[in-house]
Image (cartoon, rainbow over all chains, first blue to last red; front, side, top):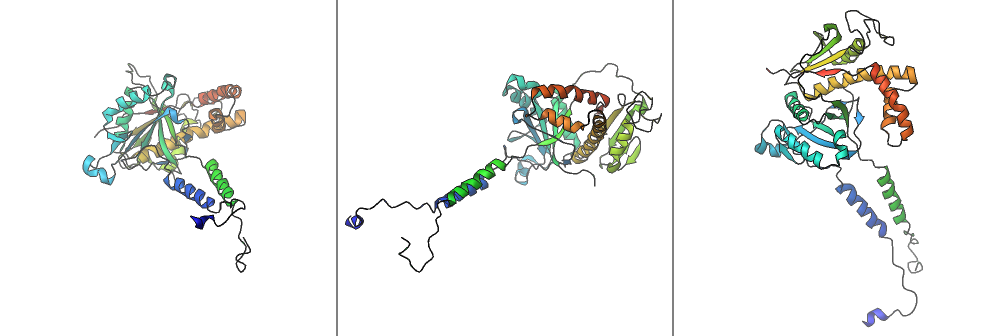
Length: 157
Length: 203
């Protein structure tokens, strides 16, 4: 104990703040790396087609998403090779869209029901047969506002 | 303190380093915008049994067919995607019956009567790729936008897109929005988007 009591009197030594920036940078880097700007984990390949006549899809609370594409390689053995749709975080059949839309509608305030837009995030290699089936299902539940979500880019060369 | 290590360089005060780091952190926090989704808005037709479909003259329909190899057939002629936009503009802007004062097209009697009657019919195969479908949709929407922009520019000195953007901008005041709305409706009425999609063919 006496070891520590040698310095008597004088001010309390200032705490070095030299390492504070390191800590802040560490935090900054951690958040930069760990942040994922994505809501749900996709089990399908989803590279969107390009278009340039686009409108922005603002107000996330008025949008529901339907994804479609071929299952990722690690899910191929389970779900097969063909293109599938994904609702929330699981692969589904087209017939399940109905319940999905109803559930999404119920989860939102009633005044938003009429302005609810369905964003179709469809892989560019999907065949139109599947897309048409999705559209038919949406028409059946009267979710008529849709948005073909695309990436910004030129279509023609 | 500094006296102790006489030979070394004097210690640099690093107390403000944290402030700099925070400044950077806040700068990036503010400037980073999470990418918003964008795409082509469409409205699906409601399911209803049309008992007698309205008669549309053959010349008022612009048929776009996409086959399973993503090739285009426009009005029974094969066409390249690059030419589709101009072809659609020519068709919509034709004004064959002379009632459309603002049309600047060729006034060809064998093409559409006026923009109000002109219908674009899009038909695709079940094997058509989604990419080709979106490309065609994009070109057709572009044709409509081109004509609307032109009329809007002539009438109100702004492009249709600018008006739309102003209308959708949350910063726009309600009073201004009410002023813009009839303008948008007016331009939409000049070139109504009549894009019908047939059920895909099954083979």
